[in-house]
Image (cartoon, rainbow, N blue to C red; front, top):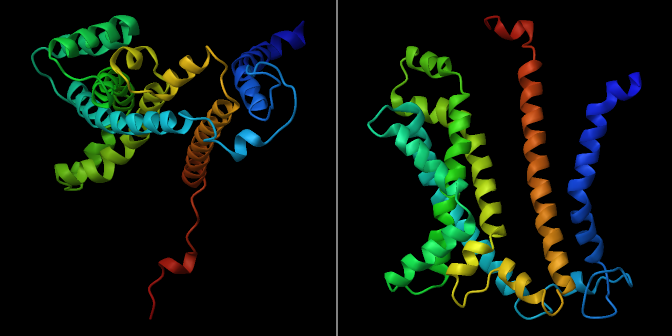
Amino acid sequence: MRWLRRNLVGIVAIAVLVYLFIPIAVIMVLSFNKPAGKYNLKFDEFSLEAWANLCGVPGVCSSFVTSIQIGIVSTIVATLLGTMIAFALVRYRFRGRSTTNLLIFLPMATPEVVMGASLLALFLNLRFPLGQITVIIAHIMFIISFVVVTVKARLQGMDPRLEEAARDLYANPRAVFRYVTFPLVLPGILGAALLGFSLSFDDFIISFFNAGTLVTFPIYIWGAAQRGIPVQVNALATIVFLVALVIVLTAQYVNHRKRRALDNPTPIAADAALPRS
């Protein structure tokens, strides 16, 4: 019992991680499968056919590229707007600030079915043709809230004395923002951008309501599920997971190197500080 009490947190953490990664492991394993029928539900035979011919099934790669394009555009716009909103909410006092804070959280609390149907009614009333533009507008609307919350948390956790020290050293506001504020907030902005891209790439409900004839990757998977999802979908999903894993591990490694450099600064040679004759 003592051993269990000491290691209970670790055991629960491992169990949760296993629970989270089992579906991903199943997807990766089935990407090397050659199913006997049209449904890729159990492992029948090892094959690299799906990896060798990722675009072998019509519509797979085109929908995948469409989702990436929509995700990139939506993420860039939402990150710019959300970052400016976060700075305004944290650094400035203005009339309606508390109301704006409340309104920012509403898209996060609103069910996607309601938001998707509302946007569809708006576009139809405006006689705006459904397609890639409407999906991008819809994605920007619900991504902004997540960007604001992420960047706002980073700003609130930042030590204001660092900016005050820069101003004491006669740095103008532009220099303070460029050399102090922005580098400190950048990890939060990048994290918000990655979160926004994941939400946009993964979204089905809002995209389904506002896509018209446009087919994104989640919409393609939903349609293919009725007749059997091709193995190429598993391969592309595995690629997305591996790319995300590489990005996260790279960021962790860079942060680890920075922390080590701060904790163990390189000593300056004693004679380096002496004047040279």
